[in-house]
Image (cartoon, rainbow, N blue to C red):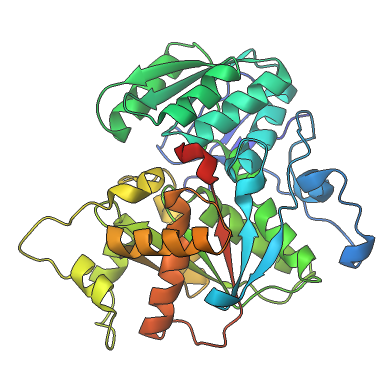
Length: 383
């Protein structure tokens, strides 16, 4: 039977089904009522059967495998120029880490007997949901900004989904999508709200630990918009600790773009001034007399009102984490470095490696800290 839902904020519970709500009556996001954990010690990585991809970790997942393209176990490679390891999330079937969430979300849709899924997205999540809806044989409508990149629009259309272009900002796209959900046009397969999506992104942490022989790094630096990967990583590392597989949860450090940085702004308002902050960060956060310049390069994380803001803030606090905002120059320079090093990623993917350098300059990370950074989207998406 599909797992029921509950609200962590107020305790409300909801039965699973195609008509289940997309959020609690109190306005907060819903999560699964039961979050399974495996028993016993895991095998060494070389003995782990990874042929099921991320579904290798089915014992952690409250959804049964129904829809898959073999996704998961993306490479974890050394990046000596950054003194870190990069996890190459851009090699997924649709070209981004969002496939982690899409395979689990569409699997739940099939479990529930859903006919049509609806999503709102600036690109990658829409392409992932469209791709896995096609694999599942379900209809999909993807609400997108009117100025969506052509490469991402084509990915949605060629998967057979119907893109619905909406004029205005990201908030207008979401509101138009929710209007369709409210009128009963489909099941909301939201990468921001649907708990199945976060069950999928949780597998990022499980793979990192497995690929490191069941150890975790000192820190993980991640892009941070809605917090889809950030919160999923936190839940995965926490689940590993609760299962007794690992001893620690790494520090989770977020990377945002100036102009769309609610987490970085909140932390800046509530922290004592850091010693000798980098010039880029000072310029980004110390503008009291003028609007903050928008970092247009990282449009994939242009989110001003994150769906699970309180949960992400809890994850930052509980891991002794942080979030900073970077301007366009720092990200663009890092993007060039990544391409020259053989990592062909889209611009938003460069924000986390750029933040890694800033965190080290500030002393938030020591030079010898063991750090993992995901590279989240393919450069093919910018063609």
